[in-house]
Length: 278
Ligand code: 9D3
Image (cartoon, rainbow, N blue to C red; front, side, top):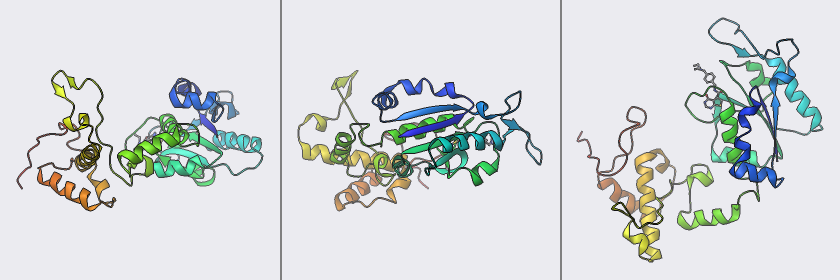
């Protein structure tokens, strides 16, 4: 799979290409990530990529010409094949695991990173085939979003990860993990490793018991608990077995409120919060 990244900060990506999964995928030749400096596609002395917004207002906007020119150059090079062109933008549709799975099917992907107040809308309208956001928070540009997209897509390229092995693991612990199936499932259960007693903080007894039936049940319960507490909206979309349904009712009875998003983002997580009586 080939990624072409168009950016005014190609160096921004250098370090992330040198570590972990992206590094391995590149070195093994399964993935190629090409960085293109947008300024190389300007035609003025100052190599300017931005201009003032029509209609007034603060900040600057990426002009269309260098971006169109960059993409045309890439198209010419790839011999007229249909290459998806992704504009990373706060106005895009949300990147999810399901969207990443679609992208992973393409042999080649072009990523356009904006900066400043935004990108001339004609790029989204007439050049990009997709407009993608990575979430509802403000970044300073598309570069981090492009890096996030590449990492999540590269993981899904067949043969890059021990894809088969980790998929099997997931279905052992929980058949429907939201991270592997587009947020259709539950959050993961907690994990522990040695020491069994860390400064008096003990690993749950059941995990040391060797009773696999009990371990499975415990993991389901804790996954349901986490989901109820941190991502209650996910529960509306999963179909629970009778056993899970019963576990969930039990969890709700145990005075465990779903998290409030936004205003209480930094409230202490988990354990023993009292239910407001209203
Ligand atoms: C504070 C400026 N905002 C005015 C209401 C608009 C704005 C313009 C440009 C906000 C962010 C950006 C730069 N962001 C991206 O290019 C971006 C992004 C993001 O900010 N959040 C989530 N996903 C993405 S993908 C690209």
